[in-house]
Image (cartoon, rainbow, N blue to C red; front, top):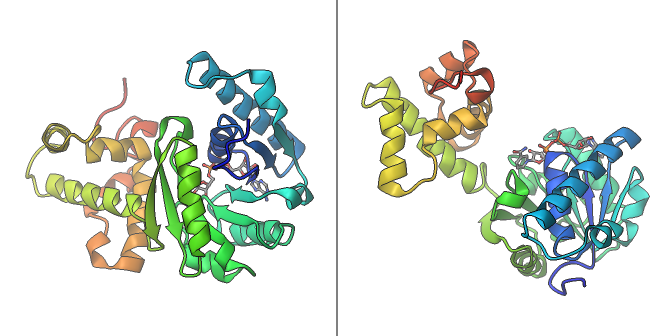
Amino acid sequence: MTNPNLPSTVGVLGGGRMGAGIAHAFLIKGANVLVVERDEASAEAARERVEAAAARSIERGAVDGNLDEMVSRLNITVDYDDFKDRRLVVEAVPEDWDLKITSLRGIEERLADDAYLASNTSSLSVNGLARELKRPQNFLGLHFFNPVPASTLIEVVLGERTSPDLAAAAKRWVDALGKTAVVVNDAPGFASSRLGVAIALEAMRMVEEGVASPADIDNAMVLGYKHPTGPLRTTDIVGLDVRLGIAEYLQSTLGERFAPPQILKDKVARGELGRKTGKGFFDWAE
Ligand SMILES: NC(=O)c1ccc[n+]([C@@H]2O[C@H](COP(=O)([O-])OP(=O)(O)OC[C@H]3O[C@@H](n4cnc5c(N)ncnc54)[C@H](O)[C@@H]3O)[C@@H](O)[C@H]2O)c1
Protein backbone atom coordinates (compact mmCIF):
# COMPACT_ATOMS: atom_id res chain seq x y z
CA MET A 1 0.00 0.00 0.00
CA THR A 2 1.28 3.47 -0.87
CA ASN A 3 2.82 5.28 2.07
CA PRO A 4 0.84 8.52 2.66
CA ASN A 5 4.10 10.30 3.54
CA LEU A 6 5.58 9.58 0.12
CA PRO A 7 4.54 11.17 -3.19
CA SER A 8 1.91 8.92 -4.80
CA THR A 9 3.89 8.82 -8.03
CA VAL A 10 7.68 9.15 -8.24
CA GLY A 11 9.90 9.52 -11.28
CA VAL A 12 13.65 9.08 -11.60
CA LEU A 13 15.67 10.28 -14.57
CA GLY A 14 18.66 8.02 -15.19
CA GLY A 15 18.69 4.48 -13.80
CA GLY A 16 22.46 4.18 -13.26
CA ARG A 17 24.16 3.46 -9.97
CA MET A 18 22.38 6.20 -8.05
CA GLY A 19 19.13 6.39 -10.02
CA ALA A 20 18.51 2.65 -9.63
CA GLY A 21 19.22 2.98 -5.90
CA ILE A 22 16.79 5.88 -5.58
CA ALA A 23 14.11 4.01 -7.54
CA HIS A 24 14.63 0.99 -5.28
CA ALA A 25 14.38 3.14 -2.13
CA PHE A 26 10.94 4.46 -3.12
CA LEU A 27 9.76 1.14 -4.53
CA ILE A 28 10.35 -0.87 -1.35
CA LYS A 29 8.35 1.71 0.62
CA GLY A 30 5.30 1.27 -1.59
CA ALA A 31 5.57 4.09 -4.14
CA ASN A 32 4.68 3.83 -7.79
CA VAL A 33 8.01 4.44 -9.56
CA LEU A 34 8.87 5.39 -13.13
CA VAL A 35 12.48 5.41 -14.36
CA VAL A 36 13.26 7.14 -17.64
CA GLU A 37 16.53 6.22 -19.38
CA ARG A 38 18.24 7.52 -22.49
CA ASP A 39 17.86 4.41 -24.66
CA GLU A 40 16.44 0.88 -24.62
CA ALA A 41 19.69 -0.84 -23.65
CA SER A 42 20.19 1.51 -20.67
CA ALA A 43 16.52 1.03 -19.73
CA GLU A 44 16.98 -2.73 -19.68
CA ALA A 45 20.14 -2.41 -17.56
CA ALA A 46 18.28 -0.08 -15.17
CA ARG A 47 15.44 -2.59 -14.84
CA GLU A 48 17.89 -5.35 -13.98
CA ARG A 49 19.58 -3.17 -11.34
CA VAL A 50 16.35 -2.15 -9.61
CA GLU A 51 14.81 -5.63 -9.72
CA ALA A 52 17.98 -7.28 -8.44
CA ALA A 53 18.17 -4.78 -5.57
CA ALA A 54 14.50 -5.39 -4.72
CA ALA A 55 15.02 -9.17 -4.76
CA ARG A 56 18.06 -8.80 -2.47
CA SER A 57 16.12 -6.65 0.00
CA ILE A 58 13.39 -9.30 0.21
CA GLU A 59 15.89 -12.17 0.55
CA ARG A 60 17.75 -10.38 3.33
CA GLY A 61 14.46 -9.83 5.14
CA ALA A 62 15.00 -6.05 5.00
CA VAL A 63 11.61 -5.63 3.33
CA ASP A 64 8.30 -7.44 3.74
CA GLY A 65 6.71 -7.96 0.42
CA ASN A 66 6.41 -9.81 -2.75
CA LEU A 67 8.73 -9.22 -5.68
CA ASP A 68 6.00 -9.49 -8.34
CA GLU A 69 3.88 -6.92 -6.52
CA MET A 70 6.88 -4.57 -6.21
CA VAL A 71 7.84 -4.96 -9.84
CA SER A 72 4.24 -4.24 -10.87
CA ARG A 73 4.71 -0.74 -9.41
CA LEU A 74 7.91 -0.17 -11.44
CA ASN A 75 7.81 1.22 -14.95
CA ILE A 76 10.92 1.89 -17.05
CA THR A 77 10.74 3.81 -20.32
CA VAL A 78 12.74 6.09 -22.61
CA ASP A 79 10.07 8.80 -22.93
CA TYR A 80 10.17 12.04 -20.91
CA ASP A 81 6.42 12.48 -21.62
CA ASP A 82 5.79 9.66 -19.14
CA PHE A 83 6.78 12.05 -16.34
CA LYS A 84 3.58 14.06 -16.81
CA ASP A 85 1.62 12.43 -13.96
CA ARG A 86 4.53 12.34 -11.47
CA ARG A 87 4.27 14.24 -8.18
CA LEU A 88 8.06 14.12 -7.65
CA VAL A 89 10.88 13.49 -10.11
CA VAL A 90 14.49 12.97 -8.97
CA GLU A 91 17.10 13.64 -11.64
CA ALA A 92 20.13 11.30 -11.47
CA VAL A 93 21.98 11.72 -14.78
CA PRO A 94 25.80 12.11 -14.81
CA GLU A 95 27.38 15.14 -13.14
CA ASP A 96 27.57 17.45 -16.17
CA TRP A 97 26.17 20.98 -15.99
CA ASP A 98 24.73 21.17 -19.51
CA LEU A 99 23.25 17.69 -19.31
CA LYS A 100 21.65 18.48 -15.93
CA ILE A 101 20.13 21.74 -17.21
CA THR A 102 18.73 20.18 -20.39
CA SER A 103 17.37 17.23 -18.42
CA LEU A 104 15.81 19.29 -15.63
CA ARG A 105 14.14 21.66 -18.10
CA GLY A 106 12.87 18.70 -20.10
CA ILE A 107 11.28 17.21 -16.99
CA GLU A 108 9.91 20.52 -15.68
CA GLU A 109 8.04 21.35 -18.87
CA ARG A 110 6.16 18.06 -18.59
CA LEU A 111 5.27 18.24 -14.90
CA ALA A 112 2.12 19.73 -13.37
CA ASP A 113 2.69 23.22 -11.92
CA ASP A 114 2.49 21.91 -8.35
CA ALA A 115 4.71 18.85 -8.82
CA TYR A 116 8.22 18.76 -7.36
CA LEU A 117 11.60 18.31 -8.99
CA ALA A 118 14.87 17.30 -7.29
CA SER A 119 18.46 16.78 -8.37
CA ASN A 120 20.78 14.16 -6.91
CA THR A 121 23.80 16.29 -7.81
CA SER A 122 26.74 15.73 -5.50
CA SER A 123 28.51 19.02 -6.24
CA LEU A 124 26.64 21.40 -8.53
CA SER A 125 25.01 24.51 -7.10
CA VAL A 126 21.32 23.96 -6.37
CA ASN A 127 20.75 27.73 -6.65
CA GLY A 128 22.56 27.75 -9.99
CA LEU A 129 20.40 24.91 -11.33
CA ALA A 130 17.26 26.58 -9.91
CA ARG A 131 18.02 29.78 -11.82
CA GLU A 132 17.64 27.82 -15.07
CA LEU A 133 14.14 26.62 -14.15
CA LYS A 134 10.69 28.22 -14.41
CA ARG A 135 9.53 27.07 -10.96
CA PRO A 136 12.58 27.29 -8.66
CA GLN A 137 10.24 27.18 -5.64
CA ASN A 138 9.42 23.56 -6.57
CA PHE A 139 13.06 22.50 -6.84
CA LEU A 140 15.69 21.27 -4.36
CA GLY A 141 18.64 18.92 -4.01
CA LEU A 142 18.11 15.40 -2.65
CA HIS A 143 21.63 14.06 -2.23
CA PHE A 144 21.41 10.31 -1.75
CA PHE A 145 24.56 8.40 -0.78
CA ASN A 146 26.15 5.43 -2.44
CA PRO A 147 25.19 2.59 -2.08
CA VAL A 148 21.65 3.88 -1.50
CA PRO A 149 20.20 0.75 0.20
CA ALA A 150 22.98 0.67 2.82
CA SER A 151 23.19 4.40 3.44
CA THR A 152 20.86 6.03 5.95
CA LEU A 153 21.76 9.63 5.10
CA ILE A 154 20.11 11.98 2.61
CA GLU A 155 21.22 15.60 2.37
CA VAL A 156 18.19 17.80 1.69
CA VAL A 157 19.72 20.81 -0.06
CA LEU A 158 17.55 23.90 0.00
CA GLY A 159 17.92 26.58 -2.64
CA GLU A 160 17.20 30.24 -1.83
CA ARG A 161 13.85 29.91 -3.54
CA THR A 162 12.85 26.40 -2.41
CA SER A 163 9.37 26.75 -0.88
CA PRO A 164 8.88 25.98 2.82
CA ASP A 165 6.20 23.46 1.79
CA LEU A 166 8.69 21.53 -0.32
CA ALA A 167 11.34 21.68 2.42
CA ALA A 168 8.86 20.21 4.91
CA ALA A 169 7.65 17.58 2.42
CA ALA A 170 11.22 16.49 1.67
CA LYS A 171 11.88 15.79 5.35
CA ARG A 172 8.71 13.67 5.51
CA TRP A 173 9.79 11.72 2.41
CA VAL A 174 13.23 11.01 3.87
CA ASP A 175 11.64 9.78 7.12
CA ALA A 176 9.24 7.60 5.15
CA LEU A 177 12.19 6.08 3.27
CA GLY A 178 13.60 5.05 6.66
CA LYS A 179 16.57 7.40 6.30
CA THR A 180 17.75 10.51 8.12
CA ALA A 181 17.70 13.98 6.58
CA VAL A 182 20.47 16.50 7.04
CA VAL A 183 19.07 19.84 5.90
CA VAL A 184 21.62 22.13 4.26
CA ASN A 185 21.29 25.56 2.70
CA ASP A 186 22.95 25.32 -0.69
CA ALA A 187 26.71 25.84 -0.35
CA PRO A 188 29.70 24.23 -2.10
CA GLY A 189 30.24 20.66 -0.93
CA PHE A 190 26.96 20.79 1.03
CA ALA A 191 27.69 19.47 4.54
CA SER A 192 29.09 16.00 3.89
CA SER A 193 31.70 16.58 1.18
CA ARG A 194 32.92 19.82 2.73
CA LEU A 195 33.54 18.34 6.15
CA GLY A 196 34.73 14.95 4.90
CA VAL A 197 37.23 16.55 2.53
CA ALA A 198 38.40 19.09 5.15
CA ILE A 199 39.37 16.29 7.55
CA ALA A 200 41.01 14.27 4.77
CA LEU A 201 43.09 17.22 3.53
CA GLU A 202 44.37 17.88 7.06
CA ALA A 203 45.22 14.18 7.43
CA MET A 204 47.21 14.37 4.17
CA ARG A 205 49.10 17.46 5.37
CA MET A 206 49.97 15.53 8.55
CA VAL A 207 51.44 12.70 6.45
CA GLU A 208 53.33 15.28 4.38
CA GLU A 209 54.76 16.89 7.53
CA GLY A 210 55.76 13.51 8.98
CA VAL A 211 53.49 13.90 12.00
CA ALA A 212 52.43 10.24 11.90
CA SER A 213 51.92 7.35 9.50
CA PRO A 214 48.67 7.04 7.50
CA ALA A 215 47.67 4.03 9.63
CA ASP A 216 48.22 5.90 12.89
CA ILE A 217 46.41 9.03 11.68
CA ASP A 218 43.43 6.89 10.64
CA ASN A 219 43.47 5.01 13.95
CA ALA A 220 43.34 8.31 15.81
CA MET A 221 39.98 8.98 14.20
CA VAL A 222 38.67 5.40 14.21
CA LEU A 223 39.54 4.62 17.83
CA GLY A 224 39.48 8.13 19.25
CA TYR A 225 36.40 9.48 17.53
CA LYS A 226 34.59 6.30 16.47
CA HIS A 227 34.74 7.07 12.75
CA PRO A 228 34.00 3.75 11.00
CA THR A 229 36.87 4.35 8.56
CA GLY A 230 39.80 6.75 8.80
CA PRO A 231 40.05 9.79 6.48
CA LEU A 232 42.96 8.39 4.43
CA ARG A 233 41.46 4.95 3.94
CA THR A 234 38.20 6.64 2.96
CA THR A 235 40.15 8.71 0.44
CA ASP A 236 41.64 5.52 -1.00
CA ILE A 237 38.15 4.01 -1.33
CA VAL A 238 36.60 7.12 -2.90
CA GLY A 239 39.59 7.63 -5.23
CA LEU A 240 42.37 10.21 -4.84
CA ASP A 241 41.50 11.72 -8.23
CA VAL A 242 37.87 12.20 -7.13
CA ARG A 243 38.96 13.84 -3.88
CA LEU A 244 41.46 16.06 -5.73
CA GLY A 245 38.65 17.25 -8.03
CA ILE A 246 36.42 18.07 -5.06
CA ALA A 247 39.27 19.86 -3.23
CA GLU A 248 40.01 21.99 -6.30
CA TYR A 249 36.34 22.86 -6.64
CA LEU A 250 36.07 23.79 -2.95
CA GLN A 251 39.32 25.80 -3.21
CA SER A 252 37.83 27.79 -6.11
CA THR A 253 34.56 28.43 -4.28
CA LEU A 254 35.47 28.55 -0.56
CA GLY A 255 39.11 29.56 -0.59
CA GLU A 256 42.65 28.45 0.08
CA ARG A 257 41.84 26.34 3.12
CA PHE A 258 40.74 23.69 0.63
CA ALA A 259 43.93 23.88 -1.48
CA PRO A 260 44.94 20.27 -2.22
CA PRO A 261 48.22 19.27 -0.51
CA GLN A 262 51.19 18.51 -2.77
CA ILE A 263 51.20 14.85 -1.65
CA LEU A 264 47.71 14.42 -3.10
CA LYS A 265 48.63 16.06 -6.41
CA ASP A 266 51.81 13.96 -6.65
CA LYS A 267 50.02 10.69 -5.96
CA VAL A 268 47.35 11.43 -8.56
CA ALA A 269 50.05 12.35 -11.10
CA ARG A 270 51.76 8.98 -10.42
CA GLY A 271 48.47 7.12 -10.90
CA GLU A 272 48.22 6.18 -7.22
CA LEU A 273 44.47 6.66 -7.12
CA GLY A 274 43.68 4.38 -4.17
CA ARG A 275 41.89 1.05 -4.08
CA LYS A 276 41.02 1.05 -7.78
CA THR A 277 44.70 1.16 -8.83
CA GLY A 278 46.08 -0.93 -5.94
CA LYS A 279 47.86 1.95 -4.20
CA GLY A 280 46.97 5.23 -2.59
CA PHE A 281 47.81 6.16 1.00
CA PHE A 282 47.66 2.40 1.64
CA ASP A 283 48.64 -0.66 -0.36
CA TRP A 284 45.60 -2.46 -1.84
CA ALA A 285 47.51 -4.90 -4.04
CA GLU A 286 46.05 -7.89 -2.16
N1 LIG B 1 28.17 7.44 -7.66
C1 LIG B 1 28.16 8.07 -6.49
O1 LIG B 1 28.87 7.69 -5.54
C2 LIG B 1 27.26 9.26 -6.27
C3 LIG B 1 26.88 9.60 -4.97
C4 LIG B 1 25.99 10.67 -4.77
C5 LIG B 1 25.53 11.39 -5.88
N2 LIG B 1 25.95 11.05 -7.14
C6 LIG B 1 25.42 11.83 -8.25
O2 LIG B 1 24.36 11.09 -8.88
C7 LIG B 1 24.30 11.40 -10.26
C8 LIG B 1 24.35 10.12 -11.07
O3 LIG B 1 25.56 9.46 -10.78
P1 LIG B 1 25.73 7.87 -11.00
O4 LIG B 1 26.95 7.49 -10.26
O5 LIG B 1 24.44 7.17 -10.75
O6 LIG B 1 26.02 7.84 -12.58
P2 LIG B 1 25.82 6.61 -13.60
O7 LIG B 1 26.69 6.93 -14.76
O8 LIG B 1 25.95 5.31 -12.90
O9 LIG B 1 24.30 6.74 -14.06
C9 LIG B 1 23.81 7.76 -14.87
C10 LIG B 1 22.65 7.20 -15.68
O10 LIG B 1 22.05 8.27 -16.40
C11 LIG B 1 21.70 7.79 -17.69
N3 LIG B 1 21.59 8.93 -18.59
C12 LIG B 1 22.58 9.66 -19.15
N4 LIG B 1 22.06 10.65 -19.90
C13 LIG B 1 20.71 10.53 -19.82
C14 LIG B 1 19.63 11.25 -20.38
N5 LIG B 1 19.83 12.31 -21.17
N6 LIG B 1 18.36 10.85 -20.10
C15 LIG B 1 18.14 9.78 -19.29
N7 LIG B 1 19.14 9.07 -18.70
C16 LIG B 1 20.40 9.44 -18.98
C17 LIG B 1 22.80 6.82 -18.05
O11 LIG B 1 22.37 5.91 -19.07
C18 LIG B 1 23.08 6.14 -16.72
O12 LIG B 1 22.29 4.98 -16.54
C19 LIG B 1 25.44 12.39 -10.52
O13 LIG B 1 24.95 13.70 -10.44
C20 LIG B 1 26.40 12.10 -9.38
O14 LIG B 1 27.21 13.22 -9.06
C21 LIG B 1 26.78 10.00 -7.36
